[in-house]
Length: 152
Image 1 (cartoon, rainbow, N blue to C red):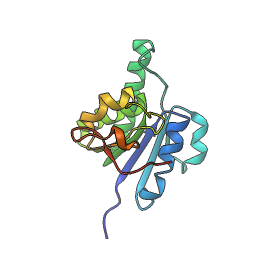
Image 2 (cartoon, helix red, strand yellow):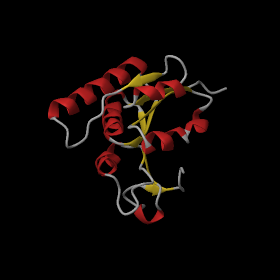
Image 3 (spheres, rainbow, N blue to C red):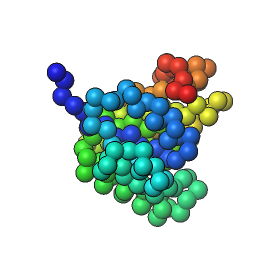
Image 4 (tube, helix red, strand yellow):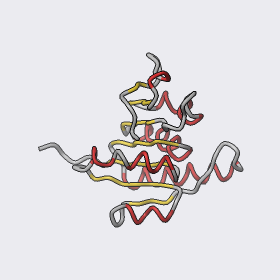
């Protein structure tokens, strides 16, 4: 029997959260934790397995961005996940980049909403992802994201 892995699923709210949650069945035999920018989503996570992170974007005040990064780092230190998966955006970017410091495996699934090009976060985080996925076949590249189908 394989040992259970600690897995952190982290994203922004809305469509990023919806797509990420569609991946939940793949991790049902593991200890899964959730983090999101919407406190109300705690209702859909097991007791004690949800972490709120503040929202920020490239257009945010630099201190707000730093606060987001520090919150994500605190979560990573607390749960020490073996795997970190995100569908975006800024919370996932910081989670994947900082997770490499604690040697977690990282997975980025770029949002299906990005039809014509990869998301800004996706373009920046690709080099930190152990598995880098796009949901659009025409955006897959040999040196970039891979395509395995859509989450939706």
